[in-house]
Amino acid sequence: MNRLVVVSNRTADPRKSAAGGLAVAVGQALRASGGLWFGWSGKVVDGRSPGEGELRLQQAGNVQLATVDLSREDYNSYYLGYSNDVLWPVFHYRLDLAHFDADYISGYRRVNQLFAQRLAGLLRPDDIIWVHDYHLIPLAAELRAMGCRQRMGFFLHIPLPPPLLLAAVPEHEWLMRSLFAYDLVGLQSNTDLGHFSGYIGAELPADILGEHMFRAFGKTLQVQAMPIGIDVDEFTALGRSREAQDTYAQMRQEYSRRRLLLGVERMDYSKGLPLRLQAFRQLLQNYPENLGSATLIQIASPSRESVDAYASLRRELESLSGAINGDFGGLDWMPVRYIHRNVSRRRLPGLYRAASVALVTPLRDGMNLVAKEFVAAQDPDDPGVLVLSRFAGAAEQLRDALLVNPYDTRHTAEAIQRALQMPLAERQQRHQALLHNVRTQDVHWWCRRFLDTLAATPLG
Ligand code: GDG
Image 1: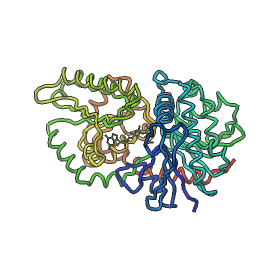
Image 2: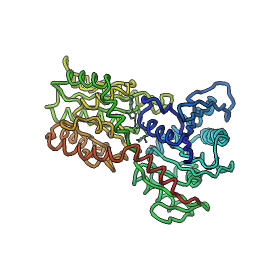
Image 3: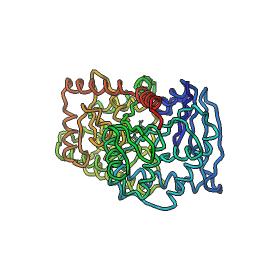
């Protein structure tokens, strides 16, 4: 059996369940064949020259973890800069938030070169290499330039934007050419696949050989839509933990006379939080029967706080939730409980299960795993309702959610009201269909599908 090598910006110890669904799934795939997981250690070293980083090896069962520290300059330009101040905003359709800085792109190239140099020495000829996400688009091209001929696949966790938006990135052609160094590229949705094909047709001297096969730069590339899922069994088991059960009991007691609405995400402008709060305000305004009852718990866990756009989002959310509470709240009821802190993963299933409605309303999202976790955590006899943005990748699969356009806050408020009033039979029926999808297309299905397709991809 070929050894699996996973490369991602961060690594995790696959034996620890706190790591979450993706780490568990990738960890399991790594353990099956014995494997290597390579990435940044998470440490930033002051005073080190850019492009330098020592390799550290650690054994976690039969999985080897290989990590590299980054210099401050590399961290600023590769991670905060090009990855999170260029690729993240543009790929989420936010050209207005992107900063095209020449130092960023040189740092991005330098760190990808550094990773390739450190990784190349660890590779065996028959390894299968699986690279994850926008931080590492040029990694395969760097490895190929060093003579590595192994099978290499890449999965993009975030959306691929429409061709003209992508073309606004000064290095767009180089980025897309870099993808052709892989043998397989996986995208989250058919929409993303359509954008890939549209870009290739419009911007490159390329041949579209079929729905999934493209030829350019003397290389054939297979591209497939493969939606990521969650580990349903792991999440269900987590729901049986003491912390999850206590959280559920506490919430049910506290909200016995009220209706609980829930939002859970990293604080990020792609998640549509200000518009969600505005929709919730309209719910209270337009459907006054919810006054004194509907309560939104919004968890926005801290994320990338040194990027400017995130600091201003934080101020906006504090002001919006304060205004809603000031305008509608009373001595015995506050409509919004806004929590800018990380909540323990063990409490999440209990929170999800206690909620009548989940609000998952990103403006753009590669997939969105919160929507799937919410479905997995429900009591099938008395399930909550999922209100889901049509702009989340998950909307292609979760057709039985109440799909909304998050920019249309009046309509979103209407959908929330419909969710709050939905009869039990309809809730059960929708939940059953959603759960079927979340179960059959889980993270193990996704992992197998990617790796089987990569193993079967003709090289060339
Ligand atoms: C990227 C893409 C794609 C959130 N707050 C807390 C917390 N979380 C957990 C959730 C969930 C995960 O973080 C978030 O996953 P998402 O998929 O919703 O979003 P991104 O982080 O943006 O992930 C996305 C994903 O990659 C996978 O391909 O779906 O589109 O953007 O698991 O539960 N966990 C804890 N405390 C929190 O406060 N413990």
